[in-house]
Amino acid sequence: MGSKGKLVKDPGIPNIVIPEKPCEDENCPYHGSLRVRGMILEGILIKYKGNKSAVIERQYLYYDSKYKRYERRRSRIHAHVPPCVNVKEGDKVIIGECRPISKSISFVILSKVS
Image (cartoon, rainbow, N blue to C red; front, side):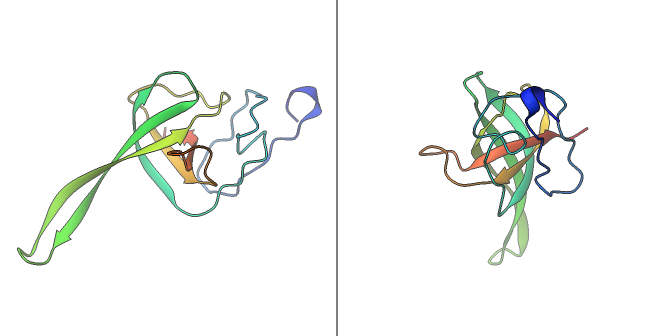
């Protein structure tokens, strides 16, 4: 049970730590009504200004069939940060896809990778 009798929901993703700190955010997958569905990704939090939004950078390998080799690529993903999740810049985080929260935010930070 969270504060004020609110239930803490389990989003159903394995290997994540459910936060102990309660929050009143409507766009929280644990204490609000936001549903996580679709892709689950891992990346490094590179920008977090404290207005509940962050930028996560993820690096991956892409196979170039013309030259028959791999190249490193990266993508930056905007994500919502619930107040109950304790993260800071430089942390490795797990993000999950959700409904669009704003024009550029369609992901939410689920937990920090320990």
